[in-house]
Image (cartoon, rainbow, N blue to C red; front, side, top):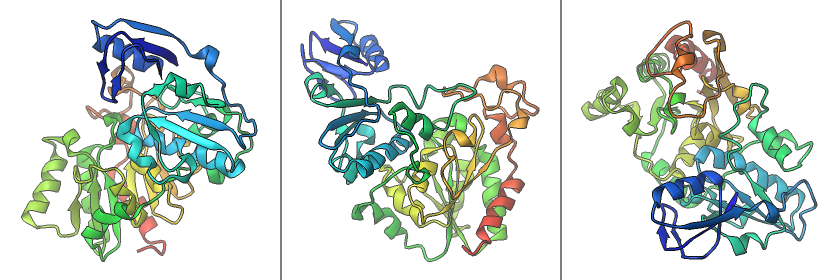
Length: 379
């Protein structure tokens, strides 16, 4: 983390940085700022000498700040930490700083004073905390072959030992307004949620295989609805977009509800997932949000670049599908938004544009697993 100060007003996607005021930002944030402001002179220094890293001390009566920049999935994983700390130290004051694009995820969260605080972090404010917990690059930067589950790494980083497994899952505080989209749907039948497209396209199940699965599932369970969620912009011109949108327009498939690009507020997905019977999704924010509801859906998760135990080891209602034998480099744990093609080329099969481990999950296999779960007293 660095302390930075510009010599003129700088307008960012977060807010405005005032001239000669000091702010605390991650190294990567500062590098981006410098690239975008070639005519601005920056003063900067390391925050290291000011950092009071938390290492398991008693927090009662203390002030602690947590930093996690963005990404809904990462925010949800980090949400486990303040919940645990407040359970152990109820008199602690915990603040969390994040990008405004994900701030709404924290609305109503009692463990962080009912909301997160938007970046940037003023340096003077940071100095007033007794302890700092900076997750700078931690969740998106670990690609080691012997890495632990993200939850174990996160708690170990803070000096929290012997944390009960029940705390190693996301916390989400529902609000009445979160149920609007769900209530408007007025669903009267059991339904499955299929997550079409995570933020990172490398973790996406092939679109044509996804549509094949949806049709197979409906043939097996015609009494169920299927809701498709995600971002249609990532699948423009694909077979799946044509099928999903076309079927809805023609009214041929009343059992299919296309919600792609129709839940711009991520919180609107919470009630939809909470009341679903089954969720089929890749390694994504939807998977983590579903895990926030202990009495919620059974999740069938689809894996490629990462090992399931990297992220969902402690999600009891999650059944992972993962076939690493397809690729000698699996799991490659690539966090980039472009596939490591030189490794993908060595997989046993090849489907252009997709992780080969994900592509190896056949619609037939996926349908069999999902229908098995649908028959366990939840249909």
